[in-house]
Amino acid sequence: MYPILSFFCIFNIRSQYQVS
Image 1 (cartoon, one colour):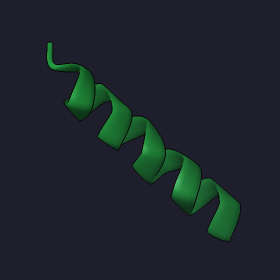
Image 2 (cartoon, helix red, strand yellow):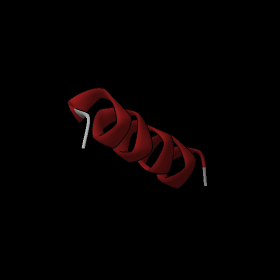
Image 3 (cartoon, rainbow, N blue to C red):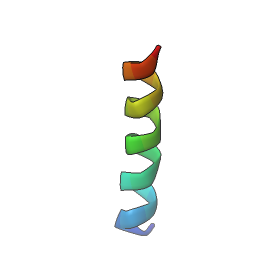
């Protein structure tokens, strides 16, 4: 769909993964 949505999703997952 929208590239921003995909980017946001990946960013959110990466952020959580880093914090964990």
